[in-house]
Length: 400
Image 1 (tube, rainbow, N blue to C red):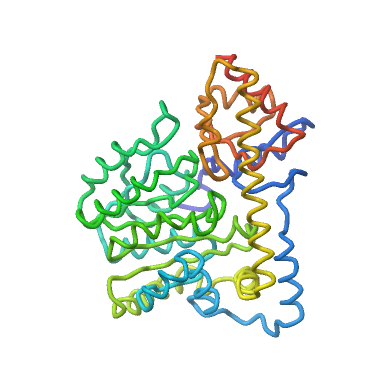
Image 2: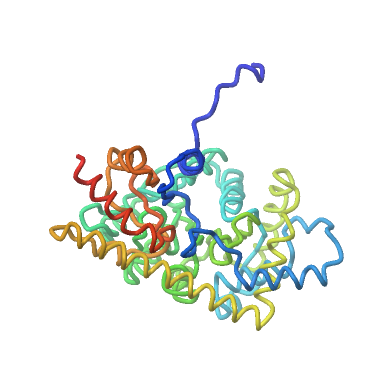
């Protein structure tokens, strides 16, 4: 093989969509594909708390030296406290091995490598559907991937009975990936009773939960969104958690994430951490400093922390408001259809139920870009684009 013989890879289904959007000359085009928060002006803003943290770093930072392999120590403490809550973190003291990672994707990839090396042959079970990149991340690491039923297209939500029945049959020693909140792409989350039942199943059957916690604060609030995670962690001896601050702090390009390995005993945490550090050393050696330093500055400064909580709440309420407006706009145009599921779903995404043919119609005829499968980023809607998007979706529905 020579480099000149390598064929082009297919475009990423989400990032490739963004590239196509950029080259679309139509002035009324709308991008509801890429999963980023947008304000009313259609921009992804830098939060004011981050701007102020940048000033603090500009005045106090004295080095750009390498961070430790596992990242800035203060960041690990803050990331664990944010994801797990102060009470659980105290109860689990010594059982949580934390490493800073390049975003939540980096945490997933490092966790996948750990599984491949120390649970060889264990399958990773993914919900149907799930984030497009999940399968790629785990298969690239050499982990066998299987699927379990999650979304019920008839109810536009989770079918807990089918979900739990499937998890009963996952072999002991396998791994089950679970979205903690704001499921991507559907926006449909299990209720509290289902989470309790899933925790009981995991403890009894013996599979390992791997939690993807990418959207904390975008569902019902920081503490509320971690409740499902804590429900299961109270029942299982071990777990992996991939967490991200990209969305809730608007630090997308800084790639700020963490991998939490929760072990059965404190004695097991340090060996696990040492193996994760060895994996990191061979992948990228050290994580980037800047984004994690910004997050630490915000989380460790009471004034900036309070400002962040308010800005996060503003983002959450904007997304919830967009859901209300989108559902109402579609219902006004198609009163014979029920769009209440859009309001029930949580987080940035709504699984619209649009077919791939309708998705293509929206892109080609209307310049409205959404992901194949019908996932809409409701955080990308604005007052100026809402009516146009509603009209376009109705036209797509009537086109087939």
